[in-house]
Image (cartoon, rainbow, N blue to C red; front, side, top):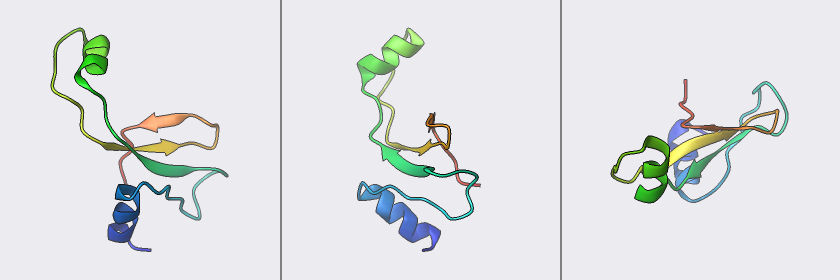
Length: 70
């Protein structure tokens, strides 16, 4: 599938995996973002909400927040 189709799948709540990634069980998914209270707890300041973003589940079972396609 092309990148545009992959983005549509993420927007629909689906997980996306790519052949050739280094490790089994890796995939990306859309995180719905954080509300103001969660952000304030992290930063110590009152901020606007953090909008949705892409995360990656890694082969070692960690989650990378804010994954960017390269």
